[in-house]
Image (cartoon, rainbow, N blue to C red; front, side):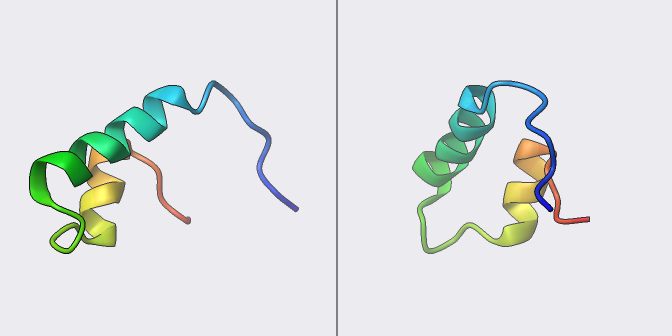
Length: 42
């Protein structure tokens, strides 16, 4: 069952895009995305 959506996705997407634009897609790791967005699979 998916988690309930608690807020707009826009800030989350903006954070992810920011790290991709600054570092490059091939350099960004899952850990980088977790750190930048504050979202994890746990």
